[in-house]
Picture (spheres, rainbow, N blue to C red):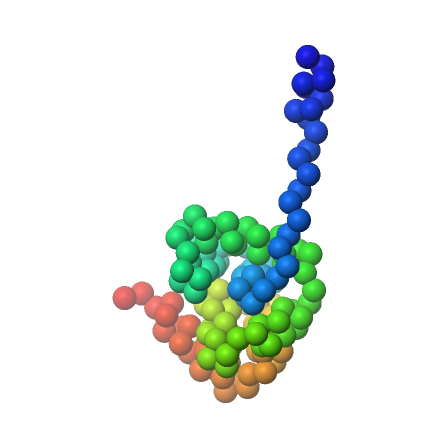
Length: 149
């Protein structure tokens, strides 16, 4: 009986995190943008889930599970530039633009533009090899995406 109780109290061995690929790196960057202002809002979480579902062809449950993995990767992760370089080296120019637009969508999701979020997006933009013009255009598309209607 006591052995059963002791076994029940033992914490399960955590599963090792997967090696980040471009999809997980982007997810971790989206989480990093949302967390950068120390306020992980429900609007940001919802936008991340929606983006992960759209970009990766996932259903809502699969997207939420992927976000949970990305949250863990973000905590243990290298700096923003390393994630962005992984994306830069493995996807097309247009996919890098789409990634930047997704980061802007998360930064704008709560309706408040925070300097910390902008700083993460800008660091990623530079590491993705994208110009300020690319970032401005991506932000404008993200802003139009965020408007109701």
